[in-house]
Amino acid sequence: MLHTGANRRRVVITGMDALSCLGDSLDEISQSLRIGRSGIVISKEREELGFRSALTGAIKPVDPAAHFPRKVRKSMGETALYAAITATKAVAMSGCAEQLKSDRAGLLIGNDSCADPIEEILATVRTEKGTGSLGSDKVIKALNSTATIHLGPMFGTRGISMSLSGACASGAHAIGWGWMLITSGMHDLCITGGSQELCWQSMAAFDGLRVFSMKLDNPAGAVRPFDRDRDGLVPGGGAATLILEDYEHAKRRGAKIIAEVASYAFSSDGDHMTTGDGKGAARCMQQALDSAGLKPSDIDYINAHATGTEAGDTAEAHAIHSVFGENGPPVSSTKSMTGHECWMAGASEALYSLLMMQGGFIAPNKNFENHDPKLPKLNIAAKPVEGVKLKHVLSNSFGFGGTNACLVLKAVE
Image (cartoon, rainbow, N blue to C red; front, top):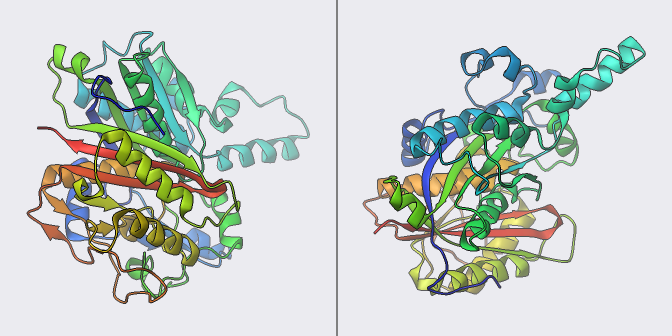
């Protein structure tokens, strides 16, 4: 269990931004969450390539030239581009550009492999029968650390610089590591978050695994977390960035505080590679509560990891029920609108939870129509809930290999 105590340094959020299928501004994303607007569509490209399921969360087209000069963008693939766009906006919101130029400021981004740039390299070698035309820009595009490679020089950070890959909990782990560095006194400031490419190359193998929903005639109704008729997930992507800062550091410079990260917890199932039984998830939730000094009844809302798969939702439902019991807090999965944003999801869902906290609403668990009799009954928010005060929110992120991450977010008093 992670350390607790009143003397632990407090970690607050002073900037944030996201690029997702719900919108490319915080206002648009907040409104989409509020009304339950889905960002899931059919990809014509994936249809033509013979994907079993062509469903995807789709972001608006991004023009790299509108954001960065050629010398920067030529080495940017999707992962680095999306991370850089959201980080730039989050830093501007925080007003911490000067403070980032320090050995007590760092970068922690959760991201996946870079499939499209790797395919580009392989195609070049096969076509040219050699590697002579492959420059540094091609290498940087393809590296797992591509996001932090770009963000370090961009913001002048001199502390930790690390890309985290913890499956679908990566974004939450990145926030959590930033939280640990600040609570421990090692850092004062961290750019944290997640980024996920949307190219078909990154999703082809998953399509072959038959884990994607086949509700092709109703994209907005395809993802059905916890519902009896769920039939799989839908992939999505983009990026989300949160600026974490020591509370006293933020206060001294007069920063506007959005919310507090009250705790971070992690665990592993130590069992099956792809199908957990929920016991590790339950331990992680309980550890997050203990670390924050909270009781289950103190949590006002749970943003569930639930992706809409048979096994995953079953395990999480039992885990939530084991910690919170029959009369637990409202639960919804924003993946019902975004699809599964994969390595970015832990960061974007923390941000979605913060938008709900700010706006006094709970986004719906869209498409929840029929209780699955195999699951314990949870307090599912099937419709948008308005006029609520969210003081403490729990955001769950679980991934392949049994990696679990939970964040407790606290409203500013």
